[in-house]
Structure formats: structure tokens, C-alpha cells
Amino acid sequence: MTRLAWMAGASVISWLLVTMVSREPVNPEVLYGMLGPLAASLVTWGLVERVHAVAPQQVMGALMAGFAGKLLFFGVYVVVMLRVLGLRPVPFIVSFTAYFIGLYVLQALFLRRLR
Image (cartoon, rainbow, N blue to C red; front, top):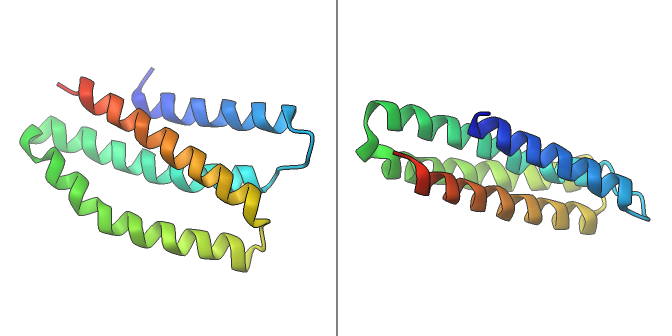
């Protein structure tokens, strides 16, 4: 199973589990809180794998170049989710933060094994 599939699979399974065990209705907030970080992580990791295959010494540079783009993306994403779609802030932000941290920890572990 590829690393992209691991990230997507873990995210979807955790979203389903949270949805099933939650006493309060948490969707669509938890779903949208997952989708933004997941999309950014999948794009980032796809880029890392491509750069590493061609020029492994440039992986860190590629990660740093993508940082500004992700800052802009996440800022716009959160504003759209809260202001345009009108999602409830607490479940969305909790979900967004948990997936953001979890997916980037997973990427850090993948980077350690990248050879």
C-alpha cells in the first residue's frame, strides 16, 4: 500500500469512527475538517516522492517552497468553511487541527524512512 493510500485510508477510517461513536452530530464539520489537511498532505507527499526520485537533495527545498502555498490555502480554506459554508466553528476547528497535526506527524515519519 502506498503512503498516499495510508494517509487517505487512515483519515477516512478515523472520520467514519468519529461519526459512528459521537453522541452529537459532527458532520459535515468533521468531514470538512479532514478534507483540507488531507488534500494538502496528499499533494505535498506526491511532490516529495517525485522530487526524491529525481533529486533527493532537493526534497527540503521543495517542502519549503510549498510552505507559502499551504499557508495561503489553509487561510482561504478555513475562511470559506466558516464564513461561506457556515460550518459550526468548534467541531470544524477541532477536526481540522487534529487532522492537520496527525497527517503532518505521519509525513514526518514517512520522511524518516525516505531513502
